[in-house]
Image 1 (cartoon, rainbow, N blue to C red):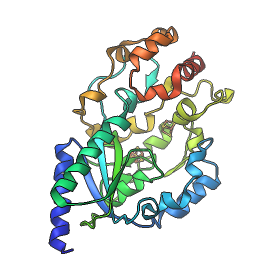
Image 2 (image 1 turned 120 degrees about the horizontal axis):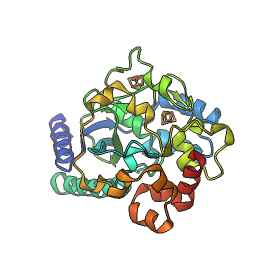
Image 3 (image 1 turned 180 degrees about the horizontal axis):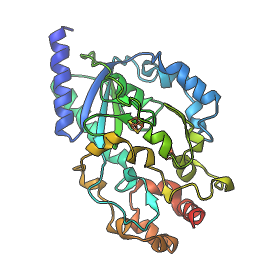
Length: 308
Ligand code: SF4
Ligand code: SF4
């Protein structure tokens, strides 16, 4: 394939991504993630994944999408903004902003399907697979490799223009494209995220112990939350945004334009007392199609009881 064709295809894919509402799109050659391999291995060996056993599965595929998708040539990474325009009331138990609206898996999958369809219509028979947090893919590493941002000391992907409140998704295609390059790390001497983490889960710059993170305790952990964590959750009842909220680059976050990410009004107005009194019926109404359904009613109640 000529360089010109690759350039034209890449440009087309990026323009289509913009049209579909993605913040940005970057492309990398599919292959083994050499730099990530020792990091992932060390992280797993230190049990920083806690009970998230799925992180240990498919180790090789996780590092190499060509083992996951036949004839994979390119990884197209996409960011979709979820930063809200309205927030929960101050006297409330907190929910991570990514979970305010409808489940992002469905919202993004639809957009990826449309993007793939448009690529097939305009470029030709292309085989590809879409991923949203759903397969063994190191999405942040691919997005960083594709120049969409750098992985910050809090382990989130950060951009100078819009901070870090966005979802990351990928299309893996059997099509050769023009590839982007990584950008520079702009964390510098800042340690705001490390200093602010309520459970000291950021052990050192760029090393987050997932098994100490409030997101893990409130979403992934199936058992009771360990007693020694009592009083440390800073009112988070589903997920935690502290290390993103304090990141200076998030001063540049702008509200999303995706109506499906707008929350049920009750989610914003509920006080601590309202959450403590929540019934299963209200839970189903407020969190219809929400990612919070993942914890189920009992899980959310457990988290709320832990904060009382
Ligand atoms: S999400 Fe919260 S608990 Fe987890 S590392 Fe960030 S600040 Fe710490
Ligand atoms: S808070 Fe500071 S150190 Fe942490 S990710 Fe943001 S810029 Fe980097």
